[in-house]
Image 1: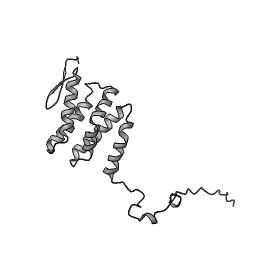
Image 2: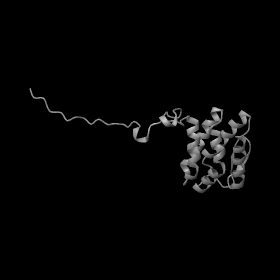
Image 3: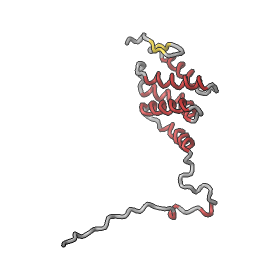
Image 4: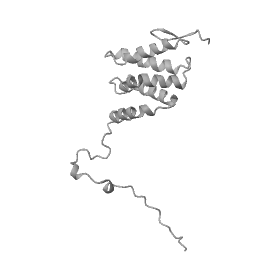
Length: 157
């Protein structure tokens, strides 16, 4: 494949050697994730994921980090979307980008917050509804005790 060949998608043709056109394509599709139309959101999430999965445009880690810095908010919003296909593609996309990103630590607080919200695990200890005065101290919380196997003697007959 030469650098002048194009990557085709359902809406437009993106020149591989034109990084600005690629960024505009991604920007347009990430903005479409905020649209109220379900079909638009589904097609946008599918196009983004398919475009990044096709390794025809070889993205290096710096470009992946630029995509994360510019579009992480849109991806994380899409994870909480009502449409299952949009959520699925967004999670796949986040996985794809994080696995190729050199430093994703700036995004971790937001990712963890979305995952906690999505999985509804705000109160893992189950003490949220208990009045503050009745909550146990950390030293009073249950601990896991491991019972060691007792040494046994051989039975001789």
